[in-house]
Length: 144
Ligand code: ZN
Image (cartoon, rainbow, N blue to C red; front, side):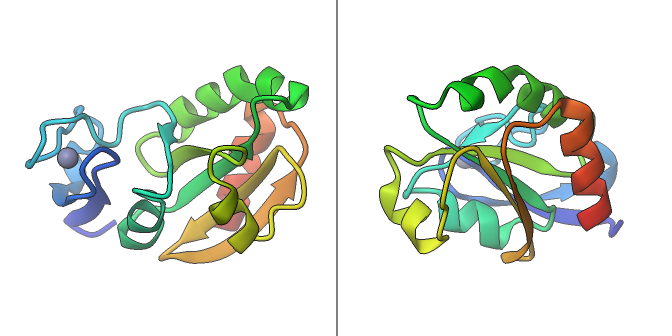
């Protein structure tokens, strides 16, 4: 792990430089004071998707879901748990494919839930279907 990492504020998209030793200490954005790298999933929209996925030094896992999808809703608590387990080494995010159809289409999301793992802005893998927290964590650790 380098001395500093760059993390994007999900609220204002500012790129923050954070000491690696302080990742776990509840950092806030230097610009807007919103919490960054909190141990729960962040919401991605057209406004912040590219910034968070391409400008974060940490890997980013995105859960593509939809409000009408029962397996997505039932996986939500497991995903929250996985976010806490992978914190602060991996950023977990959620993208509502019904609200953000352009992103889902660009990434060829065929069904929900689909989880896509990015590192350095590049896709490292994807899995479809609801998973347990332990399965999500194991899959991410194998792929980063
Ligand atoms: Zn901010």
